[in-house]
Image (cartoon, rainbow, N blue to C red; front, side, top):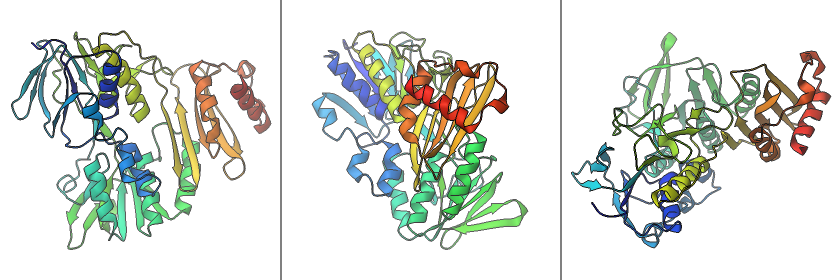
Length: 419
């Protein structure tokens, strides 16, 4: 077996951050990078900004083409992983290549989840937004589109609704659940945001599931309950993602939603690490192993794992779930755990989105656990810090809900951000 050979599976933020960290930490052996894509690392979180004209196309490739050569990385592009034998420390690719390794990182990211709607998965007009290739297809499809249906009222779905509406394209936004932004948003905040988004021209339909999709001469017909049919040019699928870990043997490697890791991004198998969307690591708010799909989190975990590949000890302190995004002319942030499941849970809100901003704070036994912010996202950094240091509002203890007037909540917010 080649001495000090590291094999990195993946080509996103976690994988590239790991490779760079390994070299910085002194790894002088071979680094092989395996990816089912055939181009440099792409940041899908920047796609909506590219469509808005805020980021140039090359800006969606934050590491650039020269990264691999500059860091002496042997690339195996366009060839997916077929099998990982973790106990034997071997990786087999779909073209038959076999690698033995001294250390290996699983950083294969996540893939779009396409609902099992008849006709949807097979259609070339059902477009997810995850890779550079899918972004190119979507950009091309938007050039002639007049009406589009978006499946999934997630942040990505709403961001794409904005892109389309501002290009003069009619949008129907559909989700099977009864709330937009279900993950990380309090229902009362979701209601405020939904009314605003509808006022911008987006037709939002919740509690609505597609039953069938069929090709038409110029587009697709989407069938819903009650004989409702929506004829559109194409469908944007923003119905979530799942970890790309089908090649992982569950009898060897511990897996939940992603590959389970410790605070050094190590798996239960020696010399095997995992990071980014393929992993499930420590959530500093809940104290549990959670899946947290953000680019910054992936890069942080990748840097930790990369130092491990080089034989150094580095620790992942845990991340805070956090998203900050423009929604039309508003700005929105979701931080931490907005719906804590233990302790005495309280939600306090104050402000006005149109005048100075609106915020909702979540507490468990007086400890700040999460926040939703509309048009006051400048508070996100201080609130994140308060959540991470487990700030406790002593003045909440023993007080009735009726005591929390808007002025009282403002005092709590000021105390939290000043501490």
